[in-house]
Structure formats: C-alpha cells, structure tokens
Length: 228
Ligand code: SF4
Image 1 (cartoon, rainbow, N blue to C red):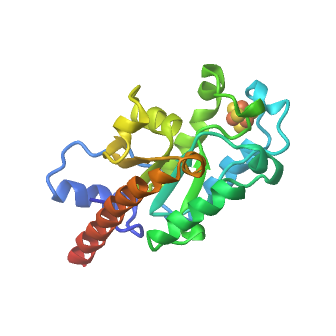
Image 2: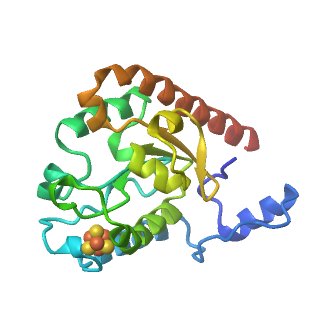
C-alpha cells in the first residue's frame, strides 16, 4: 500500500513502524517532499541532455529523457526512442504514441498526469536492440527517475522493458498480464504500442491488462481514503 505523497520521510518511517514494519526500506534523503523531487527530476534531465556515456550519443539528434508529471501515479516505460522520438526529443510520438495516448485515456488518465519514458534514452541506429554496455551506461538514469517519482504502478511497454524491470528472460506472451515488481513497485507488462500497430488483435489482451491496472489504482484510492 502506498502512503499519501504529502507525507514526509520521518512521518513515513514512523507510520511504517506503527504498522509493525521493523525493517523499513531506504528512502530518498530529501525531507522537502514532492517539490524537491521535481527539482531533482529536472537535474536528471539536465544530466541526460549532456550525457555522452555510451556510443549512442554520437548519432542521436535528441536525447529523450521522458515527459510527464513528477507526481505520476503511473509510469509507462518502453525500450528506447525511435525515429520520431529522436527527431522531436519527446517519448512516444507518431502512430505508436497516438495509440499509447488512447490506452492512457482508456484508463481514465491523462498524458500529463503520468510519466512516460524508456529504459534507454538515445535512439539505437536503425532501431536495433540496445547493447549490454549501452543498457549498463543508461539504466541508472531510469532507476533515479523511478526513485524520484515513486509511482504506484509501472507499466512495462513490450518485452525489452518488461524483462529489464522484472529481471526475467521469459517471452512477452508469458509475462504480459501478470504482475511483477521492480523495487517493490508493482509492474504490469503489456504489449508495446508499436507491436499492436502490427498486430491489432493484441488490443483485446491489452484491454484486459489495463483493467487490472485500473482495479489496482482504485484499490489504492480506497486504502488511502480509509487512512484519512
Ligand atoms: S543512451 Fe543513455 S548513457 Fe548512452 S549517451 Fe544516451 S543518455 Fe547517455
């Protein structure tokens, strides 16, 4: 169960101990709450825009740090920017982006209230799979974004993100629709919008998966309202 976002670190630790949790997790050092998180997210973005930590920096047009709310309840994480994203610097634009927008709306959410990003922030040439050394160089940025945003749910878009987040080698067919976790945050893997453009029949399965996410968010809402 997630705590209200306005709760400070000390309050949160006290609350966890009241609940009988004797080994609380590591929390961000800041005591200033969400606004400090927003500042820190901007700092991560500034670092990303200047990053040359792997070879993908050489051919990129734009780094694509991600976009959305620093208070997002839901993070959507894909693999890496494609051609349109490299051109614009924004995640999930073009046809796949439109389809993703529709999926976000179907959950009763808005694009500017979620946070959308990728595991890798620069486009691999020709949309090839990212190399292990590129993943190793870049993944820390995503980990930091997740730590700062602290979403209630992560949606893994496609096989690459799902495998990375869940530390699994399973196929997307085996992973989709089943809850996993990343640092105790629930992760729901769903088919990537680009896959759905090629395989529209998969939309029915995605809708089933989105309903599970909506049900989980509704349960969190009820749990928080019961605290107050
Ligand atoms: S892919 Fe990541 S690590 Fe590599 S240059 Fe881009 S931002 Fe830096």
